[in-house]
Length: 252
Image 1 (cartoon, rainbow, N blue to C red):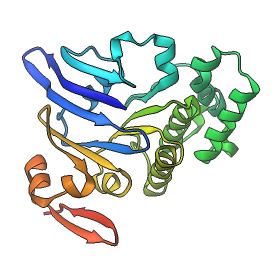
Image 2 (cartoon, rainbow, N blue to C red; image 1 turned 135 degrees about the horizontal axis):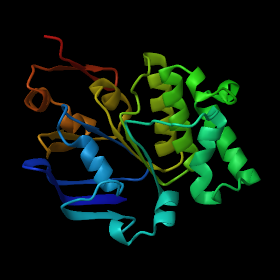
Image 3 (cartoon, helix red, strand yellow; image 1 turned 90 degrees about the vertical axis):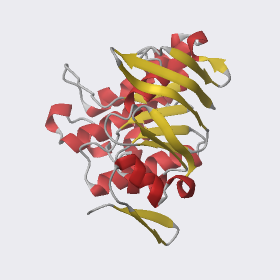
Image 4 (tube, one colour; image 1 turned 180 degrees about the horizontal axis):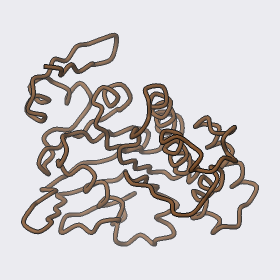
C-alpha cells in the first residue's frame, strides 16, 4: 500500500496541494478526479518523488519515500506522465524495452524479451512493434508509452491522464488492461482522469479534489453523488444507475 499523509505543495503564493491524505491499495484501481487546477497531477508527481513535497509524509510498502533507493524504487513504482516527448527516433519495441531498464540496465534477458512481448500484446501493438513512433497516430503513441509502463512490471503503477489522444475504443482497451493489472495481478493502479464515466466504470476507489484539497474519497457509490459532483465541478449533475454502473450526466 501507498499512504499519503497531509501533503502540501506551494508554488509562489498559491497552495496547489493542501493537507491531502489518501491511500492506494494493491489489487485496486484508484482514480483521482476533479477540475483543472485541483492539484491532481502535482499530487501524483509528489507521490512518485518527481516533485518535492513541502511537508507531509509518503510511505510505500511501509517505507518512507525518501528512504527508497532509486534503483529499487524504479522496480517498484512506474510512472507515465502527461507529457511524453521523445527526441530520438525509436521503434515501438525499442520504446517498450525501456520499461525493462530498471531490471536489466539495458542488457535484455530472455525474461525481459518475454515481458516486452507480453506488453505489446496486451496493448495490441504486436503488428506495429517495428514502426517508428513518428509513423504512428497520437493515440497509437500513447498506447506505446502505456505498454512501456506495463513492461516495467511494477507493484505500483501511476498514470497521469492515460486516455489523452485516445478514441473510445482504445480508451476502453486501456482501462481493461489496467483493470487486469489490478484485479488479476494485484497491482495498485492510480490514474488521474478527467472522464468521470470512465472512472466510474473501471475504478474501485475515487479521490475527488478541488483547489488542492481532497473533497471526498471512497468507493464509486460513496463519491459519485449529485450533491458532491455538483459542488466539485460547479455545474449541475444527474447521476443514473445503469446496470451495476453509475453514469454521470452533466450537459446543461
